[in-house]
Length: 174
Image (cartoon, rainbow, N blue to C red; front, side):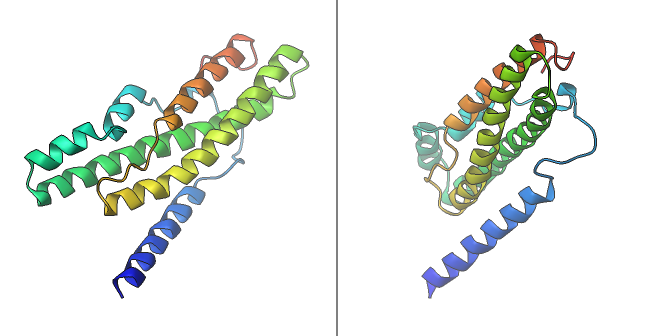
């Protein structure tokens, strides 16, 4: 019986995550967004928050009452979801910028735009997969749901956006 309840809750969380993510448009919005629309993301703060080696989580679990630990764990998961949502949104903006720049007659710009496009699509899909994992980790403290690779990919993607920007396709810095 409890297993069935857990599956129902997980299914509901997955459905909410899907609805929440698809509420924002996958590709199409009117006009080409500008790099200035990118949400700033503190990658180091995110890395500190997810604590992959779980040393901080072990410390919190050992020093806090279980109710307080669960509350803090939930707050950390919610913050991590917000970081991932920001990366997801930024990747969508970069997809649109790259799509527009791929049409450039300059081969260097078109090549940089192609790399940015592929990286942004991969990051967007990866972020889409990580959010449900984070939701599950909210239920089961001690299960890391957001690997550091997400923001390592994000760092790579922002560098690709800067290369594209430097080639002159957008006229702005990413």
